[in-house]
Length: 360
Ligand SMILES: *Cc1c(COP(=O)(O)O)cnc(C)c1O
Image (cartoon, rainbow, N blue to C red; front, side, top):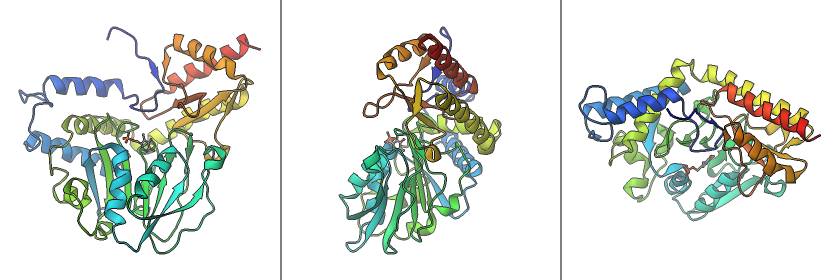
């Protein structure tokens, strides 16, 4: 490559391992002696059967998905799940669903769900700019499900415990899936857009408990019906072949590195290094309440906001990209997804130190 790799702290689409990019590029040129590019193969071919089976098996192995769950690959991003979930599970007139309002994406999920039925917002942290995740709330027994977001990508908060609500638990894990161990058996449905921590944009992972799918009733358009995807092995129509291929390569990389357990330790070390500097450095402060600080997306600002432009210019010179905060939040957000090396966090921390020395 002509340029050295940047230190990519982008929130999504996010950094992927260099070797995965090279393997994906090779597959675009020619898929393992098939005489065809991965972009040219039929989604009904044995080659693709192998790819999607491998991808599914890697998801199952890495997340220890129990046998009574289906692993599906969909399109439409995590955002399409915002409407698919209520369409499938909130389709009887007399039910409501419970939602936790703890961030920008959860709020978007609520907005879509409200198109389909009665939505009960059991708790909200919107009054404090979503700097924490509510933990004290009651979910009514008759709710069709309870929906939450495990990691709030924009605000930089993460759920480290999931409530026992007595109703089916649905979770948007787009930005922390495969970053830490989770007990899949606690959830009725988990979903994640690939481009945060799993692969390139274009595919969405859904892990759903088979018995939960029995609750689906009514007339649902095929493309929005989970049962159709399960019954067709995610091959009801042409799936995003390349995105599934690159996801498979990335999960293989994760497995070769030691899996979720290994990466969780490394992710904790990366986050610790950065939060320690934020807390120590007189120029910076963190935006999320300490107990809810995300290990994936670290949000912070400077006590003197006018220095933020200079700091951004300074880190850009050092090869750092993607740390500008979300437009409604401001400041900085450093995303520390699985493929981001510890070394890159060190470079950022050194920049913070050097900048503090220049500006004290
Ligand atoms: C990025 C993100 C989304 C939206 O994902 P798309 O795939 O762009 O629709 C939803 N939820 C969370 C937690 C996200 O980080």
